[in-house]
Length: 637
Image (cartoon, rainbow, N blue to C red; front, side, top):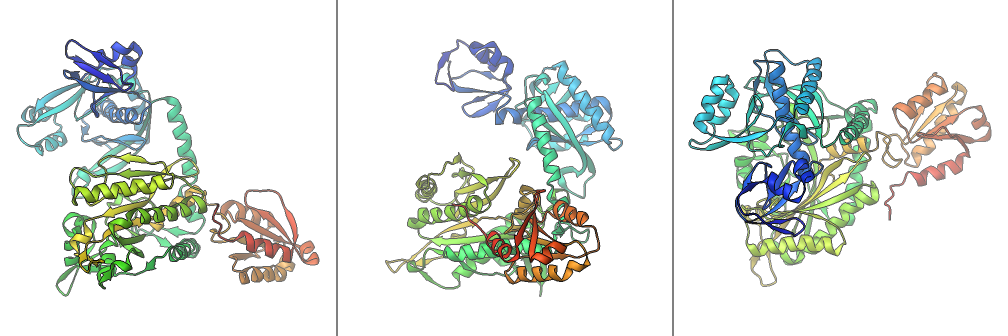
């Protein structure tokens, strides 16, 4: 058989052999280091026996796919450690997740923080033992019998859901056996850098009617250095946690009376409204009109859109006059109705329709996380209706608008990913090819680099995803440009063409902030609460040294407010040192103005900027002119 490697070299083998043998034919170090192999684009264990011509790539531990394999194997390693340390614990499932892994257990007694330390140490011992990891097959019936003997009723339940007659794959490492598709590392010695994070409750199969299990989370990386770097990043992220800063800065809070429904406080509303006002102004400049659609709509609409059948478990429903209604989980169907309200001609296209719509989605309580994962949020949706010929030019316009916000306003670096047609899709080959070519063409025209995710598009159209990178290197997906051939068809949306006939428009869904609440959470963590002057809820705080200074300080605050500056006065009878520490340390005010006897006599101000010990005295009028300029929203060129 002929094996073609990544570098184009081809090697012949006289008989079937496993991936270790093939790797060893290149070098012993490769065979020792590789954690998996990719055969014709599919991942396999290193023990997999190949018996046909193929393209082969070996997966190194430092690669994205290699780390994924390590993390999945680390979940198995943790389960083995738990069973060794806590006999009688029942195992359930344990996948890899971003940066790590978890496993759900049903222990006799709840795990403690001390238990996590013991489990982590046992995992490290198992790693040093370098236990061989072996894949083997069992029939469904054999597997049920095997796990019933072990008393592992959760595994039995999983296997019973699988069709009869199926052959199932399992992995064995020492005394531990788990049902799994794999692939996994060749031996436990490949799992070198792990850290257990926390233990939390999780319902079996995510259903609150089922038993509460114990979920242990852990981190896993290819090397100790990678793990240490990540833990350092997590330490910094903890300092920036938007839930903590949101409370300290008096921006928002979450209540037990409404889990997943954030309450915005006055300072938070200033931040929110600043973002919204800017969004409205920039969209008006870009030729968008704004609409507002109802928050609750009839079931029939959601049946037409498909949400009732495919998304109902995430929707809040109610009955009005014996008719089923649902609170909207998405703005799109309402946006389509608003466009369809009038018959449009080709002269009206492209029609750019924007909506800041409040949507509600039911999320499990365990998934809620500050402003990042909520049950109610405002989506900055826009829908563009256009002809096929207008796709590329409209995409260029949207990409430029997104860039104006991300790069020129906030200074974010970002990447773009193009997701193409999946196996199951609607629409003709011609429209898909035209749409994908238009998306790629727009990016090429703008000189933008992008990654292609083959087959990752939605069934109703290809899309572009925009992932921003924050101040500590984390990536967040916010913006999306999604082409849709589905909703115009479902709602029978048409326009009258030059030929006088009705035609189906192409529809784009696009967001920039995504969820405004989530974007605020990202900004809080990106800036660590120290917002730039234009965005800060309080831009300037005027601090008095004593009561004799209050009159002049009030005059300054009034003059600042007349210029549209968000200024506050602190005339409490606290020491000036305390006031400065609070304004600078807790509230992170961009600029503090200190007023004492000297400033009153000279009609000056003493200014101090956030994060700096330096002080500067300035004439009051010069100060007012400077601040007016500094507080302007600035787009970088």
